[in-house]
Amino acid sequence: MRLALEEASLAFSEGEVPVGAVLVRDGQVVARAHNCREKSGDPTAHAETIVLRAGAENNWRLTDATLYVTKEPCVMCAGAMVNARLKKLVYGCRDPKGGAVDSLYKILSDKRLNHQVEVVSGVLEKECADILTRFFKARRGGRVVEGGGLENRCGGNSTEGSNPSLSAS
Image (cartoon, rainbow, N blue to C red):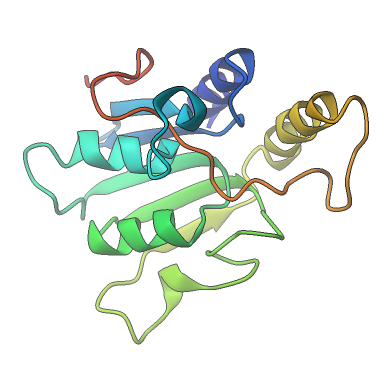
């Protein structure tokens, strides 16, 4: 999760919603990314989707992978995790206005779907929430909105290959 927070910090410094993600297989980082939706103009280029795309380069089934992300994923990202057959999601803070794992929806545990994803939440929760709160407070000129400023619906990143923070190892 510390690596995901590093990615979130990069997003913050670029003026993007500070969400970072890291995909791990067999204890090795496969990909890491942060939101760059503004830079890319791609509404689907969230940190989560970027690492899923990179991790699925050789096999779209990520049944042996764990995705770490600083904020609870949105509907689109959660759906992509189900479609990728992701083994496990670990996230930092909840998103009461857009979260699709625990807050608004429970997509990853929905038995009606063909795959469920193991979920661990609240890892480095305070640090993950704090960077989002600082970002939105700065964006609003010091005014924090209800919910701690967590009104992001899963910001995004540039398309695969154009994110300088995306790395496959």
